[in-house]
Image (cartoon, rainbow, N blue to C red; front, side):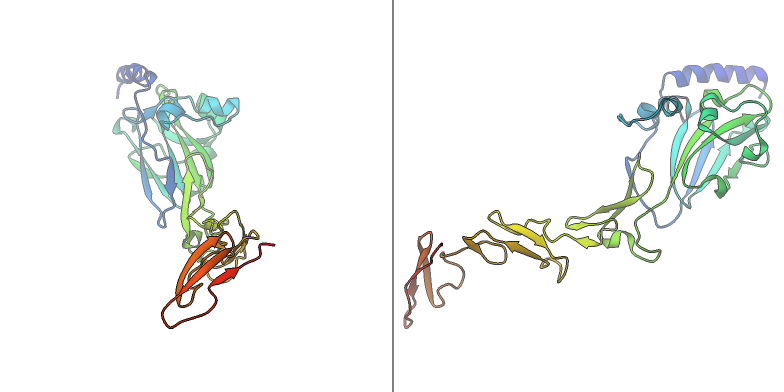
Length: 299
């Protein structure tokens, strides 16, 4: 690529990226994968440069509090940001036209990401041992847990970092297992990470709680009726590990039985009829006898 061609491309790209026409597709929540994934990032200025981190790069609006430096970093032209899980592999694929440009990638600070790397860049910050040509895998040592800032480092020709050749990569780990062999979220939830969260954590299914969804909350389904208090015993069989503290006029496992009123099998061999709030009457079946009126004291 000649110097004249590069200048024409730069003029085109300045106009193109300034309009913020690139909208990156994003998932707000992602579930942890049990197997690592290969990601190929095209190192190009032609089709994946976003200009505003919120509206273009992530296609959302948010009120997250950030300091001034972080806000500046989010509003510079850049390749659509990546979010990886720990163990994923990242490959950088450059355009053929960049092969003669003397280009490499540098692991930079947030300040260098905003302003682009200066001349005299430290060699130990270079991601690749040679200039970027074709496809290269990013060494896992550059992909530890946290946010990393990669930017173009050039030795000749016009700088392209200010036009968008910089990449924000966030690598996340998961905290969804009690041990390395334990099931994710005790099989009672999903291991998820929202786009702004720093790691993957358990989001528990209904009735379960705890960091690993290991605790069954027997009271979450509100089994106690008539304003009774539920006490989770966290013992016994699931669904039966609670007790209800009933008001004085109610009884039964779930405080659903009114004292002095008909209940199932109140009249063993007959039909039960409620008379007053604390009395009922048994109409006996043929060939059966017994008390027909029962009076309960509410004191």
